[in-house]
Length: 139
Ligand SMILES: [Zn+2]
Image 1: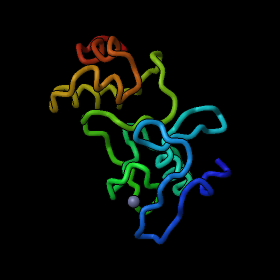
Image 2: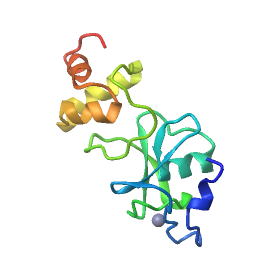
Image 3: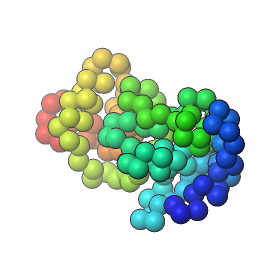
Image 4: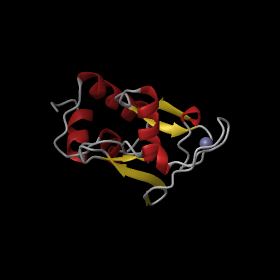
């Protein structure tokens, strides 16, 4: 991550700062020292705020430029059950959710008609786990 900003074309505060490093699909990607793949803009946000992206949130660009890494264009937003696009950090099928996340997940499922497959992606768990959670069984 030390070279991070050298891979961002930095401009003025109100300009977009495009990511010049590796791109995967329609977003900038990089590997953390621990080997996790994260999106470039999420890394920019974390470097700026010196914290990880809060659970249940993801970093999005206010400007709509998917490669923009200008921290003043980035915001950590609460996931609202729309189709997931950004993936940060580690995902695996054995992840356990916190009680809060379980409550949140059930609320998403009931209120917003999100599919179980979408929820599985958002929370980084398997669809089977989502199914068990929304049916109110254990996790
Ligand atoms: Zn921007």
